[in-house]
Image (cartoon, rainbow, N blue to C red; front, side):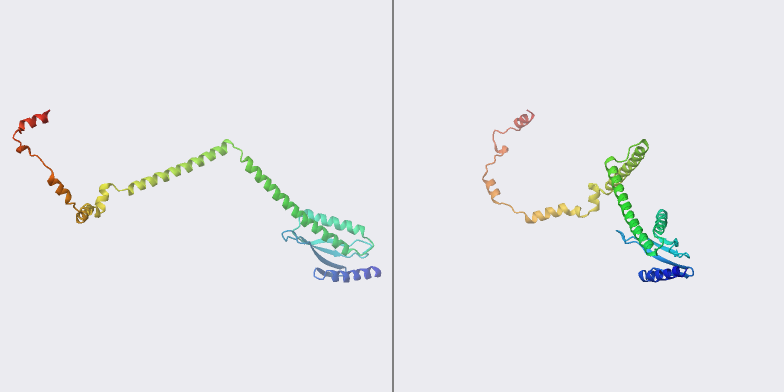
Length: 240
């Protein structure tokens, strides 16, 4: 028993030195302690963690220590079961020698594997979602009577709404459009616009007097001055 006690004390001192931030003594008789094990960070900085509790048996290391999962973070139930199986296997293989460091190292490697599995599962899910999206893109949604009728009802409702909006806009445009009379009555500038135009034109009108001089040179005959003029003959020509 003294030999077991000496080996146990030496291992405890070594463990405290190796795991200064994660080693915690719970009791001295029987010796009981915890060691927190954290995986390496994954692709998105995710980690998994477990706190292992060990209790020395009286004849440790010839007899396996008691162990349990004291706490855990981000582990599934099947992961916890796998860790317990791993501890049992490692304890059986290392009987007769101090083994806590070996057990903790095996759990550390297991946690790293779990993080890699999480990464793999995530990649597979992403790939599956991409495949489903691609199938949906090329094949579309299967047409059934039910979803066709739903689409038709929605389409008709949208079309009716567009027609109502267009009719309302046309009606509003018709109300806002004034007739010529309404424009004349509304815009009083139209009352004087023509008069003003004529006044402006009169003020700026230039008369070519030479045109009248040329007219004086024309020989215009007056029917009354013609000795042979007979008004009856003209009336006869008009009736013909």
